Image 1 (cartoon, rainbow, N blue to C red):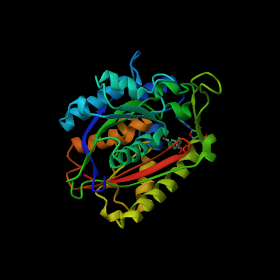
Image 2: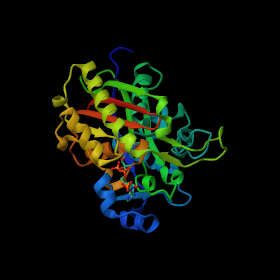
Image 3: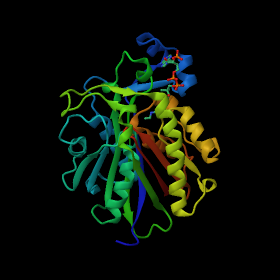
Length: 322
Ligand code: UT7
């Protein structure tokens, strides 16, 4: 399959209707709008309604991406859902989404790399397409983190929200220089205790709650993200000044600023949506991507860098010519 490039054909997003402001959070835990805005940049988060599941968010974002691509669901031969908050332990949320979209052929599976899930999915999808196993992949990052938060822990519950974002990725042999140029993935399992969920089917037989040592995660995030961006650029012979748009995982405004500074990239070139939806884990990169495509910032021919870091630790970056 040499000569096949993986091209982004469409983008989609979905945020649940219910918005919870920082002022509302201050009624739930001992916090203030000022603290949350100053330390994180977050102004509000969206929370899924009762009975609204990760697969519902994913399906809505997936539909929007298909519409944006001008493609019918029947042309999708692989559904990939990056999520750490699946509907059920099994089957995979991706097969539920496949059914909800009325797709009866091909394959579907979930991918678990927490906040890096979408970037991991991007690399996996690119390799599946270039390897010939799939032609049109619907890649979705979808989360209902509100369901795994400790709503009494102010150090974590103010940071996260629910949402979904999606892309349609297709293999093309006449894409020119468009498409995915390079991917880099890393993980380090020794950092488990800095960010994890204290439950699971095999350990506690419960879903568990998110636990994080935020300050430690912050420091690792800036270093790891800057390193992996430099590594992916080195692979391609490109430099930070070649990047038109950085679309980062949206965890904390200060991480975005610090990473851009470390890389020497103009902060105006960084797509920021964290103020609108908080940290939506695997959904955050495609949510930001969809926003910047929809409002016309990202245009055909632009060099776009996706990057994320999350629980595990896991981290990764991808370069794509739009
Ligand atoms: O998506 C996966 C990756 N995750 C991340 O990237 C998250 C990375 N970490 C962060 O974004 C930041 O470390 C946080 C936003 C979690 C925390 O910001 P910080 O500037 O590192 O604050 P801190 O943890 O050092 O806490 C400072 C103070 C503490 O009080 P004392 O000990 O100084 O008296 C906290 O108890 O702020 C207090 N605090 C709060 N105060 C009001 C912690 N949470 C809150 C809160 N409201 N919600």
